[in-house]
Image (tube, helix red, strand yellow):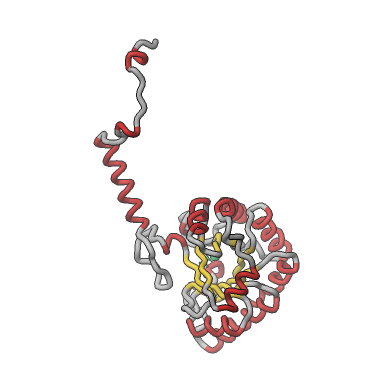
Amino acid sequence: PKRTTLAALRKMKAEGRKITMVTTYDYPSAVLADRAGLPLVLVGDSVGMVVQGHDSTLPVTVDEMVYHTRMVARGAGRAMVIADLPFMAYANMEEGLRNAHRLMAEGGAQAIKMEGGAEMAPLVRRLTDNGIPVMAHIGLRPQSQHQMGLRVQARDEAGIKALMADARAHEAAGAFGLLLECIPAEVAQEVTRRFSPVTIGIGAGSGCDGQVQVWHDLLGVYGTKPFKHAKCYADVGSVTQAALEAYRHEVETGSFPAEANTTHVDPAVVTSQG
Ligand code: KIV
Ligand code: NA
């Protein structure tokens, strides 16, 4: 099969077929997501937290996003690769254009995602006018956490009205997708019904066109009690730790490497040498 296209995503929305996305940050994760048949992978700036160990996404740079996107692009042959514009990489039009270009031309992404409400719609327009598919990330926006906090958005009338205005502005600006983070299910469902871009939710209920999860949450890399909005489908953290402990034990007790892992020559040939 060929790579996921925007047309294919629109068709999935029209036909009510759900769209699955996961974050990936390197070659092996992209290969596995691709093999599992996921149509979309996101190189999220969550890399700053789950891979780099920062306590927010704010320190992530464009150079780092390009680096991770390149690794993902080499592994994803069928999934569309969407890459995040990181914090302050689109503070003005020219920077936004230049950095989106880098994610695509140097990174190999097929689309970009950027956080922001209606105020960012002019940049969405500019990018889409230049052939760059844009997914606009609204609702909870981690890059703006020092302004809006990290809580569920669009809970009251004013908040819902503002979110609808954001979605409408991005639709008008040509965004192909809306990432809906941490908003009530009823609001996400109405955005999905009312507007043409495909909606991908995280903490936004089951009424979205698709869902996204962060790799490390989905796989239980740091434990199996992720956030309310997350579900753990494996216990990779425990499996990995048990494997490493078994390895250490075998090295310390001398049972690894075993004969099967070992190559020999005639010992006399070795001892006869200088
Ligand atoms: O960076 C990221 O992983 C994201 C998803 C949580 C939507 O933006
Ligand atoms: Na992100």
